[in-house]
Image (cartoon, rainbow, N blue to C red; front, side, top):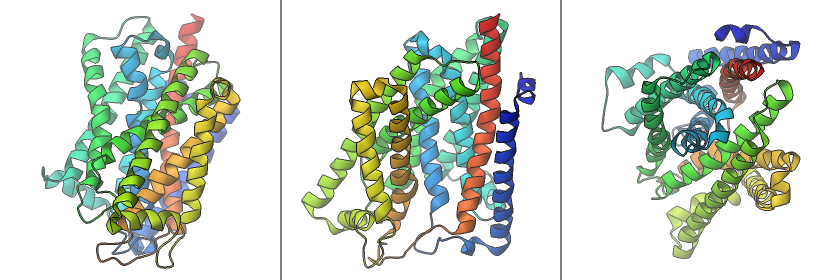
Length: 386
C-alpha cells in the first residue's frame, strides 16, 4: 500500500518538499546545538525544561485523543466513525513520533537516550513513559495498517487485531496519565503539585486532539476525493465542546484552590503567568491571548448554529488549538519552574535555534502524517469506487 504515497498531485509534492526544507533547517540547528551544547537554548539551571518538553506534553495529548474515535467505533459499534478511525490512529502515530523526537533533542546528546534502556530504573516515571509511548505508537501503527489492508481486500480484519484494539483503548489513557505523573510527582513544583493534573491533561487532550482531527478532516475533504463525512465531524464537534468545558472548569478549580486558600506557592506561578513576577512577565500577553481564545472557542462551540456550521467550527477549532497550546505547550512548563523552590524568578524564552529545531520536529511529524493520510485516503477512495 505504501506505493500510493509515491503518486500525487503537484500540490502534494510541493507540500512534502516544503516540509523537507523545514526538516533540513531543523536538523542543521540540531547539529549546531549538538556541537555547542544546550547553552544555545533558553534553558538554564532553574528552567531545565522548555519548549521541547512543552511540545512533548502537548502532542502526547494529541496522540491520546485518538481514543475518542477508536472507543466509539470498536467498543460501542458507532459505525459512522469507521470512515475516520484510521485518520485518528495515524494522527496518533505521527504525534508520538514528534514526542519521541522532542525527548531526543531535549537530551542534548543522543547517546543519553540509551541510558533509559541500558540502565532501566522502574522507580522512575520517565522509564514508564518511554514504555507506554513506544507501545502506543506500535499499537496504532499495526492496528491502523492491518485494518486498512483488510478494508482494501474487502475482508474483515483478523481476530488478533481486535485484541490489540481493546488493549490500545486503556493504553491511550495511560500515556497521558503517566506523562502527567512526571509533573504531579514533584513536591518542589507547586504549580504541578495537584491531584487533578492527570484529569486536566486528559480533558485538554480530548478537546485539542479531536479539534485538530476536525481540521484535518476538512483539509482531507478539500484536497482529496475522500469525504470523512458531515455526521462524523458533527459528532467530533460535540466531543470537543464537552471536553473544552471540562478543561476550563478544571482550570477554574485550580484558581479557586490557589487564591481562596491564599497559598503563596500555588498563587505565584499563576500570578507570574497572567501578570508577571519580579519584573518578569513575558508570558502574560500569551496567557491572556489564550484566555480570550478559549472564551471565543467556547462561544462558537456551545451555540448550536455556529457549531454545526463548518466554517465557524473550523475557526472554533483553530482558536481552541491555539489556546490549549499556549496553556499546555508553553505556560505549563515554564510556570512550573517559576518561581523556583528558592522563591527566585529566572526568565526563560526559547532562542531562535530552539524554535527552528522545534519547527523541524513538527515538520517531521506532519511529513509522516501526510504520507500515512495519502495512503489511507487513496485506499478508501479506491474501495468506495469499486
